[in-house]
Image (cartoon, rainbow, N blue to C red; front, side, top):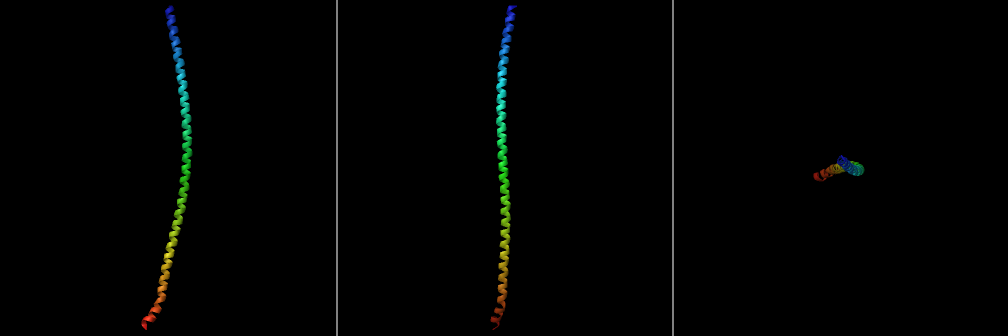
Length: 107
């Protein structure tokens, strides 16, 4: 009977050690998970900030591009108008020369 009691005490002591070891392992795992969660939160925050920065820069560049396109279109319109004006003046100049040509040609 004494042997049984000693065996039970040994098993009880062994179970307590195992329980203590499991508690320590659980505690370490919880700390590890907490650290990972902190790291994930930091990463997500930095990712959100970076994404916001890039989105802002893209929006800024799109506005600049729209402005450049508008200026380019305006410059092309002015160029077309100038070409039309030059062409019209050349025609007018040639029409003015016709009477002189006719006078000199008929003599």
